[in-house]
Image (cartoon, rainbow, N blue to C red):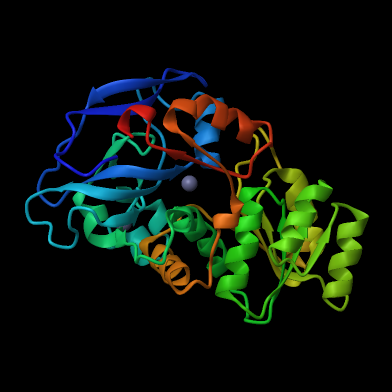
Length: 354
Ligand SMILES: [Zn+2]
Ligand SMILES: [Zn+2]
């Protein structure tokens, strides 16, 4: 979007119920005190967006999208942290920091955290950012940091939270189950956050294993016997310190338990089918001190750590972007992800905004 006076109208991708969406014109939001208005630069299409579309859980009229880089086109009263033209990355959720859940370190369970601080959502040419996000969680991008790398701050923060919850030592060995965009992002964040780590990526698709190798995986393997042999060989027969399940479901939980060492952890990162129940051998948890860890979203702390890794260049997820297209092509982008023909899809402003 061009610099200039704040626009009167906004093009948004609105949910119509179920998987249907349409590009709609709405009045553009106006920033109030402490708020900023962003012109979209890029927005990432996230697994959660796909989940909400295919399960029809987004109410009619909802505008999804939350992985956003924009530039400031207007600021509300009292905003001195940002100026017009700044490129900004910002997440959509910020915890209160004071409730019991926040104090216990479960900030992403906080009631306040669930509030969406983007209006109407990030699949839009113009996005309003609420004061709490402006104040606590928005970052100005330095010139050397690309939109395509910075747009991963929120998803990479989610990944880092799972890594922190697994309490891995610096020389850990980890397994990543699945080499889709989130699996490969795990690989990159593990390597950036713990440079001494050894990572084995498991995926049935040879092409994706090849990509994992190119992106720095120490080992790759197909699921099943090959995965077991590879992880055993890589860990002196012990099994991995942690397995990160980016696929979801009882099958990969069992794979994760099989591939981790005694005392190791399986981190559940993905949605399982709604009626899925795990039939795991409880004694393999009890007798061998294994941990099954849930992880959800990211707090401000993980996002700020990720921003530092992005800024220093230690983390660059931009090679995961396979497609970039305007919001007008939203349906095509969704289909590419759904049919596993894309890793990360980014949307740019609608044709009308350019
Ligand atoms: Zn996301
Ligand atoms: Zn809280």
